[in-house]
Image 1 (cartoon, rainbow, N blue to C red):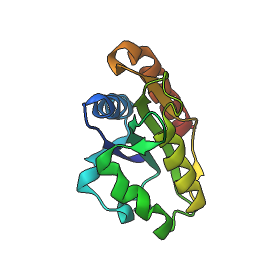
Image 2 (cartoon, helix red, strand yellow; image 1 turned 90 degrees about the vertical axis):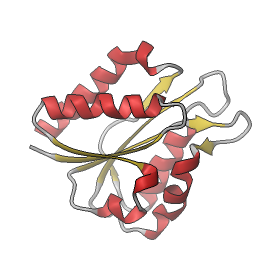
Image 3 (spheres, rainbow, N blue to C red; image 1 turned 45 degrees about the vertical axis):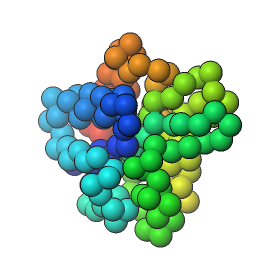
Amino acid sequence: MASVFITYGSTTGNTAYVAESVQRTLEQNGHEVTIEDVSDINVADLAKEYDLCCLGCSTWGEDEIELQDDFIPVYEEIENVDLTGKQIVCFGCGDSSYEYYCGAVDAIEEACKNAGATVFADSLKIDGDPKAEQADIDAWANDLVAKLNA
């Protein structure tokens, strides 16, 4: 059984929906999950003794990458925490009609890698309403389970 930390920033509820879907799949497969809204954590929580940290953030902005507001303070501090040896995976919602589709996901992943983290799996990027993409969310979460169980 792995211990997994999920944190997410969600304005409209879409990224929270994805986070809760992933949580449900992980728990149904015997993994211990701690889930927190990013506004309730600090960056040091990413360095705690979890087997995997999942970071979820929606992307805003048409002309530049804009992270969901609550995620910005944590994102700006990632460079100040040592994530060496930590495994992370990122997910988020966006709109593929924008130039930087799910750019926040890529930005957070890159910041974590620069802080020493290892990317555990490919990120999950949801275009629009996550309820319409439930099969993709479930498949991604099940891939995480398979990798955690390996």
